[in-house]
Length: 470
Image (cartoon, rainbow, N blue to C red):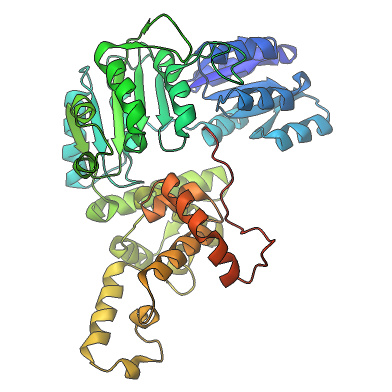
């Protein structure tokens, strides 16, 4: 992990840097906000920025946002004015870190804000064989295409490959192709020159140059517009890029990893993804199975997340009841490992000493596995008498007489409610991209407002704001 420290912090920055280095971070320190901006523009990159709260943190956050530099910021201060700390948090700082630094506190902030996930937790034979293949190809320079449903751990696997490669000491840079609008993605990938477009107030180094010498992960590459795919193909083939507005090509030395949750051959047949780019990236393919197909991994992963969130919330280590473990292994886990993590986080917070099924699945166990639902529906149909089941004993009755479109709408809104409005988590659980979720919400906006009793001038709770570059 890369940490950028901005400001002298009355000498405590050096202490903080040493603590971060001991935690495995690579630290750069500059004294002024301008120097910090220049470091980020120059492609030195940072997974976490610690800024002296006396240096006008809100101004710094606005500056990086205006230049579409996405990195978490933590304000720091020695006996700082609470007003300045509050202003920093309101402006978008993730945390406020008091100084002199406490080693445990800095470790917790680094873990919470920019956690490095580099190891797989697994016990299932399918994952053992997959990791064995990853170990074989990691030391090579081959491009790797990681496929599988959202939440299965593709990015974790990519990080694993990088850390077991010859480039492990160099940068590992990730860009989410689905989260950045098309008109911004080219600049994010290849950088731009000053004055290349409105708002380009300085030269900006893109992800290709930032990752030079290391590894670049193109996350959800199947969401990239075909127009940009042609330029990406040239960059991968020739290891040369052109900054937006630039006149001189720039050589880069990178290894490319890519991920997708889509059927790539189907995307190629539909003309949504270039076949030549796919074969250029797909030198080695690693397909990560769904969590429900890796039943022996469910309990070890759950125990890992319990330990993680008990530690983060300063709670004694909790254990799951036998019934909880039994139901978890039967559950369908549509959101895969990411859903499991979210569920166990909530269970840690809601449970007493022992985590019971109600803490995991809710009071009515409504999220119980799809297999039990299917069995219930089959039993209802075998009666050949729908009216006899009108009391609601069969979960299938709630779907009779409704359109697929209505069911889809309710599923999307219900999942957003379950995720407290977090679109990223909701999209993961639903198995769709953020872009698809945004388009669906835009389509539903008016009808959902009416169905929920909103007046025409009220705002839908989950209406999606303008897409931001992340």
